[in-house]
Length: 65
Image (cartoon, rainbow, N blue to C red; front, side, top):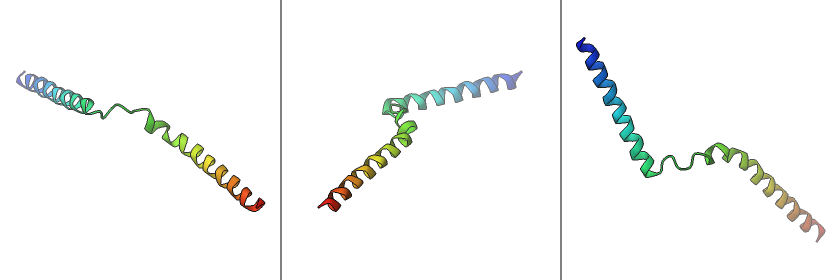
């Protein structure tokens, strides 16, 4: 029966430590921008396409001169 009290004490202590760590990092702003990393890879292709289109237009203007 003593081991049960010890296990409960350890688990509650561990949960309290994780809660404190979570609160500290939440106040530091660690979890504010959770959308951007997930969709950043989607915008990378669009930026490359716009860059390539811009280069093609520049090349066409130079060839036309």
